[in-house]
Image (cartoon, rainbow, N blue to C red; front, side):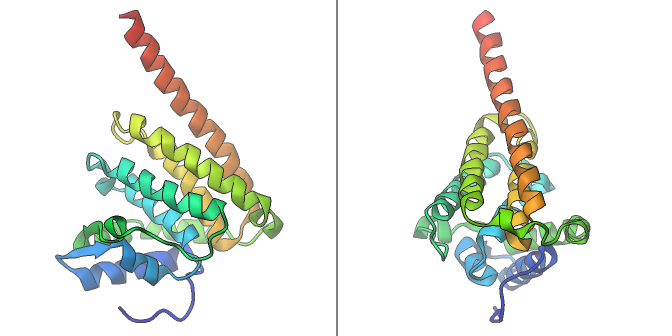
Length: 208
């Protein structure tokens, strides 16, 4: 892979690097560890964008994939919470990934979404993307990820928490404080909806 001179500055940049990684992998697996290197030191934001984009693409319908991505994001969010500057993945995760050709398809299909996101979101209210807000975002992402495994029982039901995580990732990437606030609101709605579905299902089961 060609060496990247700077960290990605937009969703379009993230998809460019994702597509390059997929093209180089081809029929082989594009590894998470290689993606970390490709995204640079600001990789927290890009990865909280990449995984939700994969989830809302057709690839996200693969059984178990949303949960697997949620597990990885919990690990990343914990590192963000405790202030780790550079991402770290254990070997068993760094060596996992998707086939390169699937990654290319995801990047291509998400291009219109990326253009829309880059058009509307930029560095507003940057103070809300620093300090305590970073920790709040990390905690919210962890909470959102815990809703994914039960929601996976319904096709694409994990979309709402993934959209909230995507909003946090975009806010971190482009330093958009207004979007960070919106992401917090979305996370409350997503977590509340997930809990409502879970307990509602439990109540139905108990009543049967």
